[in-house]
Image 1 (spheres, rainbow, N blue to C red):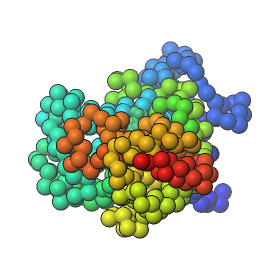
Image 2 (cartoon, helix red, strand yellow):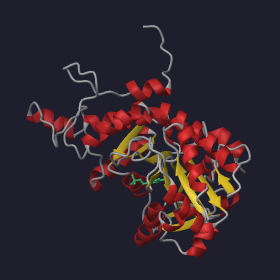
Image 3 (tube, rainbow, N blue to C red):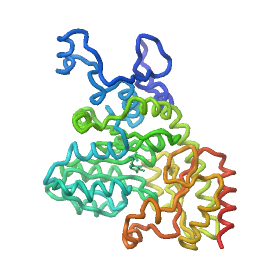
Length: 394
Ligand SMILES: *Cc1c(COP(=O)(O)O)cnc(C)c1O
């Protein structure tokens, strides 16, 4: 056999890690079964003792779910992956597999709201110490290290302001104190950023967003080195976190177009971000693909593009933001993101409504801020829609 070249991401997204049966099915088969049979009693014993590869029970592993997790691991350039029921289940698995009472976690102040709630309301109940630091301030991450620091957790780019964290720098800090670095890669997806290649130990994400891409099902994935992922698999099995086979099968079809969608959607996001910069109603545009983004060089180093989420602040505060949201006709008014359908949200009163006003302002989220997730509709129609909505501000 001649040595074959490594396959490109778009090929892996379609052909990677298929679980083939003897029926020669062309698409990935959907295994809707809670358990798997043994040929003999000895065969069952060998499967349970991990002396032979195979499947026993779908809370532990299922062929459709394994195919999906392994395909994402190929795109993340990780050795293995575990697919979970939701993005939050993936985050829980990444944190609780490795943190115990008495351990210390360092994380960013700019986290997805539910992740922030899980860490500050629940991890702390089990005696895990938490320090919150400013997302982009590498020195603050380093200064927060304590003798019991076991993990650094970051989401880059952040929601909704697209602030970046330097993954390679955070990996150095983590590894310097014997800790792990976990990155929530949801905003870029593995199509635009592979945190493991910059030294992260775990890449975590909500497959509900760009990987599905069509707003159908929930799911999550954790990827990393095989030895770490074995531990995550044991935790996910005990805690009952695994993805359902049906959702894995839906997500596999989302996966097939992920690199293509993310390339086109991020090109459109850049076009819209640049158009917004020229509008007199807009104070500021937050998009890491813009040449004047304060971390443009870091974005160019670790991301293939600025991603698909554009945030912008209006001069007229909440009143102006609500008028724009109420007048769009093409954008969907919903908090989901990563969909082929473009969406528009007002973070102050939706995704970040449970934060105190002072905390929101400290995080840079003001009343006039709007978050867009750019989809696959024609960008000319999206721009025309925003233009007529901006003209409704009174
Ligand atoms: C949505 C989201 C999650 C949680 O994912 P679910 O699938 O909704 O559980 C985690 N992190 C980020 C950045 C998200 O956008």
